[in-house]
Amino acid sequence: DAKITRAEAVAIANRVLGRLGDSAAIKAGEGKRFPDVSESFWGFESIVEATSEHGHSFDAKRQNETWTK
Image (cartoon, rainbow, N blue to C red; front, side, top):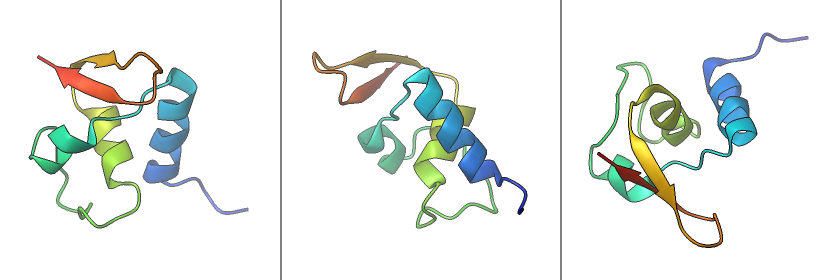
């Protein structure tokens, strides 16, 4: 009966939209950051993916997303 969290909501939205995030770009500092979301938080990459404007491409098997400008 708990309310859905921001991280849970964006994780669902990313999955529905087939968005994977670019871990290398995010780890390199790309994307939007929030002061209340630490890089060690389980939903960090999902939140950055969902809130950062970027182009993207996928590898041939659609298992990896690469951010483009």
